[in-house]
Image 1: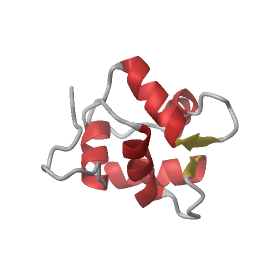
Image 2: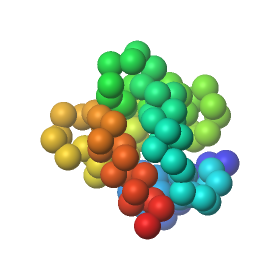
Image 3: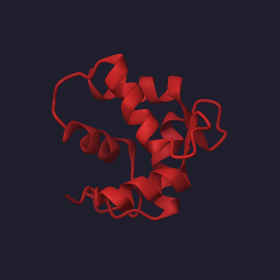
Image 4: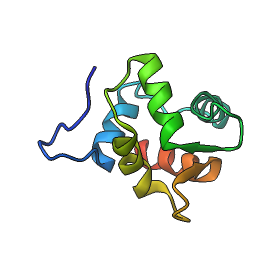
Length: 100
């Protein structure tokens, strides 16, 4: 699967990120499943997902072809405190947005 840049622009945007998560199963995950998914992306266990972690996990899973800059752009719409990282609460909101 390659969800990268579906709308023809040069940016990965919120809609494309939603498409990525929608491709998993289509059923709303439990909070436990959301935490498990968060923990997969939070490779260093610091409680945050940053662009480097997102890029590494996506690369390992061969899920998306993304640069670190693409990952920064994906994180930005959900990064409420603008620290360049997504904490678990922000990740939950991202998932809620996807499954509305």
